[in-house]
Length: 243
Image 1 (cartoon, rainbow, N blue to C red):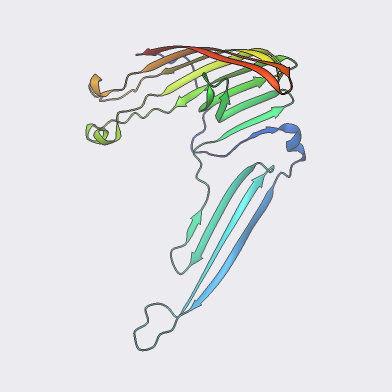
Image 2: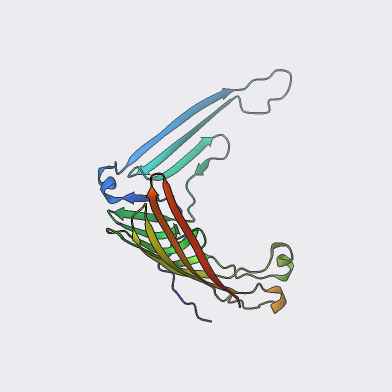
C-alpha cells in the first residue's frame, strides 16, 4: 500500500526543547548567553611502610558551561581533565522542534505535539509540521507527520524476547471552528495509518503485528454561561480498521 501522506519535515540526530515563542518577544531577548563554572583540584599522597599505590601528586580540573540562545534554547556542556581518562560531555540530540508564533499565527516544525481534543489528537508527539490560526473568531489547526517510527529489523531469535517489528505510522488532521477562548465550536478530522515494513526476509504472518488504520471525527463545544459557570461537550466517533 502507498502512504497517504508525506512527512513534511525531518530532522536527523537533533534534539532541543523548543517552546512556542512569540517573535516579538524574541526581538527583545538576549540572543546569546554563556554561563558556567570551573573547578581545579590537587591531591598529595604519601604512605610509610608500604609501597606507594599512586603518584604522590595528582590534579584534576572540571567545568560546566551552558549556552543559551534567545533565552529559550539551552545547550549544556561539561568536561573533566586530570590524571585519569579525560571526559567531555555535550548534548546528544535526537529530537528537535520549534513553534514560532506571531500574533494569531503559530507554526510547528520538527518534533512537536498538538492537541485537537482529548479523544482525537491529544498531544501525541509527531515528526512533521503543523499550523494554528486564530484570527478574530476563526479557529483553524492542521498537522501532518510521522506518529511512530518503524523498526524494520527482524531476527527470529531476538524477537522472541523483544517483540515483533513496528510499523511506520503516519497521520494527518485538522480542526476548524468558530468562537473565542471561552465559547467556541470546533469540528475535527484525524486520520492515521500504518505503512509497510519493507523487510527483506519477513517472518510468517502469524508473527507480524497487524497494520492498523483509524479515522476519527470529533466535535468540541464550550459555552460560557456566567463566570465561572460554563457548559462543555466533547465527543468523537472512531472508525478503526485492522489491516
